[in-house]
Image 1 (cartoon, rainbow, N blue to C red):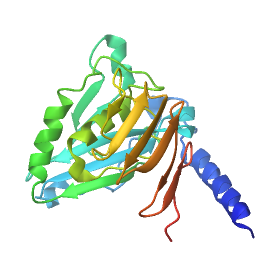
Image 2 (image 1 turned 90 degrees about the vertical axis):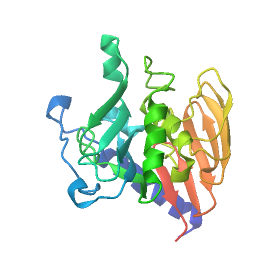
Image 3 (image 1 turned 90 degrees about the horizontal axis):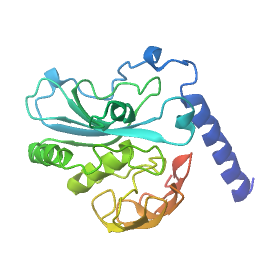
Length: 243
């Protein structure tokens, strides 16, 4: 089998996985599963400070194109996690789109199972949590929400990630909105390292030790990550080729 045929085979399987992993079974978000998935530690058994970042395919047909992302933190000896995320429906009543809840961070996103993107534990993490909480309060798009090209939940996650580059968060290419910079055209990459150029989240590039090299075309990300070697594609996400 040629390399080209192998590549086509992988892409087809990945597309099938996308469709089958998205929740199309429930037409009502109120009945979609929000059950825990076991990815988060039990606070009662975890005295150390913890930061986790999650992504899950967006609800219904939106999940074919992208993911919803969120931050979760637990300071040392805290009895619960605090989840920071942006949800567009809050804007309908004129309030802030930023949601802060004390809850389990590893719940399904209305039927779709989350994946753990990054985690930081132990010494020094309490200070990072303080920086995250402070950064949440300065989010510039707290009254705005646009699915494409942003600002949306992934714009918010990227905003937080830039404040804590110690996490080394590499947001997936399916995190549409992560490249939205508003009226600015340059910034550090969403990981908080490297460099980014972006025009309204529609066109741009990223060069970073964490993200590798990415090109954004109409909000769709194409890229290569050298170490570990992976390619990044719209809809599909990141394909690890290091093995």
